[in-house]
Image 1 (cartoon, rainbow, N blue to C red):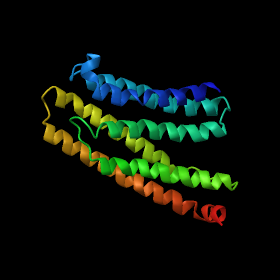
Image 2: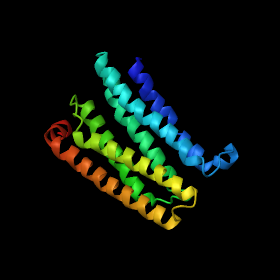
Image 3: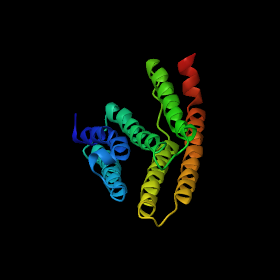
Image 4: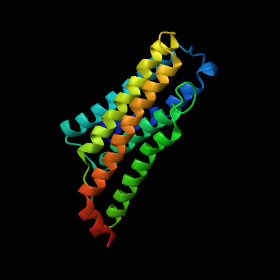
Length: 194
């Protein structure tokens, strides 16, 4: 356990706060106009801890196998928790689009596990990092648009349309990143599954 791992675990532990805050805001005494700001604070802390854990691991020469596994897992848990939360309430994202994120990560994790069991380590791809950045940007966009929506300056219909469009773009790229990962590692996957 090192400091970089601490920040990775912090992201994982912050993830359940998104559905708790969004779905239980009334019982927590959070007003609708305050909700986006509260959620933005937790998302900012989560995303900055993602940047910080990688920086610390490289700076202190503490890049570990555990960190290589936990870091993308923490990204996935954070973003999928948030997007699944947004299938409820006023955002109303379609569940099928959000499932693209979930299935992609299950697919990649299964491939990595199968290959690891055969002694083959699959390298991460830049498309996976771009996928995580794009998902984070879409999450910030939705929470940012929540501010004018909750103050009556943006209609619900337009808010939902923009949110759906942004998440759809992210889902398409997420699917592409799965194809890229599989294609780039096909020889290793074939070797591991023989």
